Length: 341
Image (cartoon, rainbow, N blue to C red):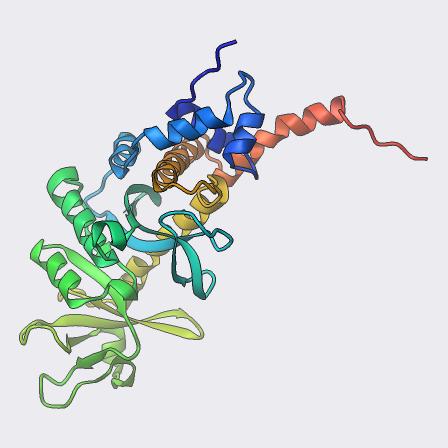
């Protein structure tokens, strides 16, 4: 009997329907056409899937808006129990609140604020030993692609504190785009117009007017005449973010808080991606296999969210609902029957 050669569609279908185990061995054990482990491994070594493929699929679903947001953030695929997987490096994980071994991903999500829907439109694998690029370089590359090639309309760029650097903020400004990003508490700023020394951002004095309308500041290290608008955004009763924007016409703290709320869409994306696609579960050692697995997981997330939008369900309901027919069948005619002695 001739063994069927696996395809991209086959592998994505496996990631979509599998619930817990996403290994190649588990896939081979459950194929009805006797697909071998070696054949699956060979496919994943030979295909070359990139973020461009993810964009092609996202573009077919995406509903652009001139009021849209482009959000950048990174996440770590946990490989803490892996020892010889290529691409794995020690790096900080926000979920673990410490250093773990993993594969770093820098992701770009597009949000339509009118519908609340969002799509992953680009990503980069953090691999400085191979390409010599840091995470800021990847963000700049992706942003250039959005403006010059994808030509997506959007209102503003949203980023985390780690990306609030002079070079990146000035680059966004050079594209004539708006940004919103929080500063760390110890960032040195001046709100006196050069009359007083720089101070930590969390040591500034705030009037009632400043609270509501923000204040004009200069960040240390930026060009002499380059000013930004600073707002205090209450994230919770125990946390305040210091958010800056190059939109000097912005004068509403409520509007800034609403904009910053959009940034959590990418956190939601990271959670859904890890919990429904098995993106962290592949244990193959070769970098090419990991890259192809990551791309397939992104495609699976796009497919699941598209179905969820069409049916008015959550991505989790779609994923876990695949077990419903199995449960109904087992209750009707169980393979393993319960008995009492």
